[in-house]
Image 1 (cartoon, rainbow, N blue to C red):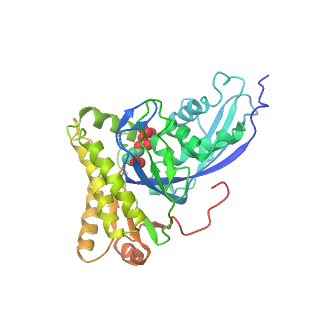
Image 2: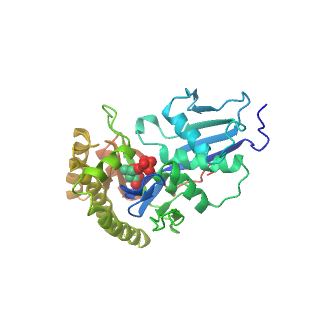
Image 3: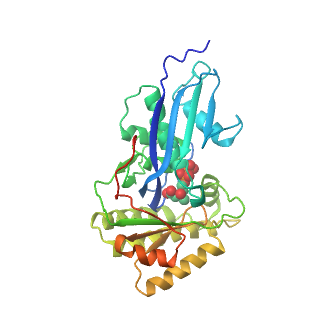
Length: 327
Ligand code: DP6
């Protein structure tokens, strides 16, 4: 009979995040240690709710958005492998039930690994009765997915790259600053054929792109400048830096051999429409990750302009509301 007495049921929530200054390249792939620091903004109530508890059936069960996943499903395998960090050597004695639900609209096409691993870390810590602070949880979440190190907090978060080989100095830290007028819009576009995962794309770029070697130093410089612009609430400085950093990251991929381009014709159409609107005075800037969708940053008073340009966009106010339970 499996002894599940050491595990109790625990619910947790973590928001998704968008990098304003990107993480793209690792100095240690096993520990997800990045080549440069990065800064993100969390997406408030767009994120993952996760419950971890003992599995009454005596076998591990993983469910996602209401469906029980097959044991060879890649999400289930990654989640259980991650849970093994907590039940090291005891996995057969501690069968777990892991239930996750994303509040991110599927149509928004955002990757959920950041909020997923951050919520799973919180839920596992609670289920195993571990009293860890957010810094420790960020170090652990990073092992599941690098960007998860930034999803333990709301608001702006910096992930310090750290220098140590063991990664103990590589964790997220909330920037102590609220910017109530700050807005994000997600312009969701057709996905087309399944692209490479960000993990595979990052490895491929690091290994083959002649534009990768100068990238970490530029990205580190961008990260510092982006943090300074956030601290000064200087949107006119921040917007161009964020957009240039994203396009720089995509340039490293496009120069990979063979090339890697997550951006589609629709992405470029959105960008050109945005650039034209900017020339006409609309203060909104774009960033893109490992997919075709465009995320816009702007301030509250540009909301109508942004929605006129992109009526299908979803607008998020990252500092604008009370956050739900577990957040
Ligand atoms: C383009 O965190 O998904 O979104 O650490 O391999 O799991 P792994 O990668 P992941 O990469 C995110 C890449 C990005 C930029 C960013 O979020 O900083």
